[in-house]
Image 1 (cartoon, one colour):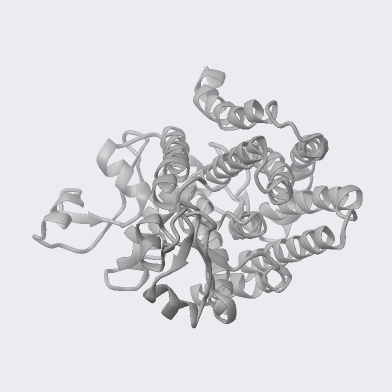
Image 2 (cartoon, helix red, strand yellow):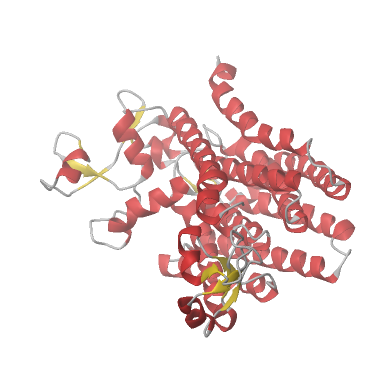
Length: 444
């Protein structure tokens, strides 16, 4: 019976990785194929190492007092059980070892590649250390916003990519028009000349090409954007959490989606170097995350802690920035964006915000139901969000909203549903990236 209960989760894991496997077979570049095969082999070793090392080292965490109780099981017999916390440091360490081994074989091909590897390793290692510090010291939220900013500095210092942005098709005619000589040559309009006094504009040889706007001396703004991206990624995973398997599970699904994007671009022969680098980092991450997920899946035998959330978020930021697909990366985080926007009134203290906004256990039925806050209003939105006999409003998280809409669920079923939602959202992100973006930006 226990095996049957795991089937939906196993199917979701398999379905997440299958697109990348199918696309890998269509990659023609032999160099990229060889590097990805080596990375996949290390990902397998990372998975095996994590599954072996984690149960060996968790007793040390317990003896050090780094344990926690499962708040979603409050009122049940297992609520008082002490579970090792901060085990994300083990997955992070195994990941770093895998990447260092990759660097030994493939990072010394050129100085540029060595810089990419070192900056990636330094940022991820720094963030993993700071995450473990947070697990031990329980830092306030203001520091949690500052830490990713500091950890991303090595990445930003090493960034030497383009700071140009593509002008959307509906707007490019304001900057570029057909030349007087005809033939489709593009020339700057009056507005284009005015903009070119501040920014450098790349005019396509033929009208219909892509118009690029180089930020030039304002490229610092682009660096700020990338720093904010790192802050978002780390905290988005950290906020969208609280039930067994969700932190590692969502990261696994997102990583598989980004890997599929890398494989698709490699199949098309687009920006091979950067997408190969991104995929080579993601494969060990997927392997170590899957090993951690075995122990974090319901019923959890280990909690990943803030360490893993920061480690995962910084890994995503690194591959998005070094791979030059930061906008596509955000499309893979649609549930996290929705959860953040939904949480804003409580996060900024506009509404009452308890320390824990997790679902609560209905001990009579053994099901999770939305937790509530003491707030009442006749505004239509709040009437929809009412829950419970007292008419209180649910805590504003995506987890509670799903329970409010779908109804009470067992914790394993809720996690599987949320991961399926994550996978569907990533699929929708691909539709936006490869269909709607093409309408706005031209061929992409």
